[in-house]
Image (cartoon, rainbow, N blue to C red; front, side, top):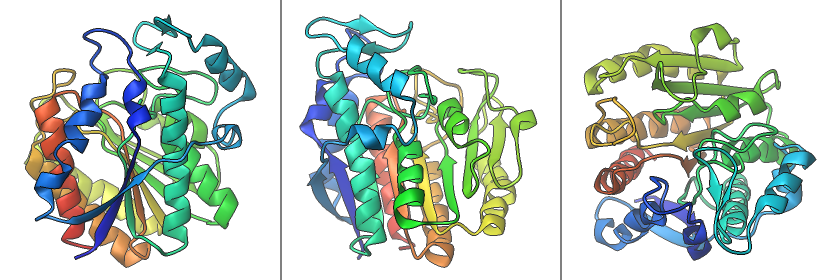
Amino acid sequence: MKTTVIYSHLECLKHEPGFEHPESPNRLKAILDTLPDKTEHFHYHYEEAPLGTEQQVLLAHTPELLERIKAIAPNDGLAQIDADTLMSPGSLIAALRSTGAACNAIDEIMAGYIQHAFCATRPPGHHATTDQAMGFCLFNYIAIAALYAQQTYGLERIAIVDFDVHHGNGTQDIVKDKEGLFYISTHQSPFYPGTGSEAENSPHNILNIPLHAGTGHSAYKKIFTEKVIPALQDFKPQLLLVSAGFDAHHKDPLAAIEFSELTYQWLGEQLGDFAEEYCQSRILSVLEGGYNLDALSSSFQAYLAGIHTKL
């Protein structure tokens, strides 16, 4: 049985955006606390996420954004970036651990030490644009990982698949018009952040597939099989990155898509199967959304179990 390396760090729990904020430290606890109970589905190895560097952050973000985040970071209490995005004293270190996790995972994957890594880190990242933190997100780790892999290892084709219920406007902003990077997103529409229409698509660079509220397992399988997989096959990426948001689950309080654990297991199977055929089984998954704690934990387990039926 293959092994997934799970990167995380207790400092990712120190990002505390406020009482009753949906992006709470309990999200990460719900994942980490259940890991020892689920090893019958897959073997895993836990590694502490190293601190990311400012140079890694600057692969995807402007110096102005980095300096703004450092300046806003409070010594006590909360600092507000926008209506949804707040920083506590531990937020910057959590974001740097998340950055380090993604880049270190790329190093391990490209060295051939592992095939699949999952960054169980927070805050999430896919709404952070080149120059703006927003939507619970400070830095965009999946985009940083893509650019890090491209620049460090000279990869010519890297695909990012984002199945979070929200469109990853930040990832799209960062990778748009960049040669060799292909961003594919399925997401509820119309919905926050209001981007992700098919009009924004560009061959082998951006593929948005908006979903109607109420989309369930069977309908999604058809969409993914008929649109996402053929697009990936045509692109033939050398590395597959996944923005793994679990907030399309039917129990999630922030959305209206009807996925279940079966959907996430199936997604893991499809992505694992594709990576085995096209990417030397190289996959990096990064945690994005998921705000019902029970559904988040069980969906995470189902996704990893699905990947390991194929790797």
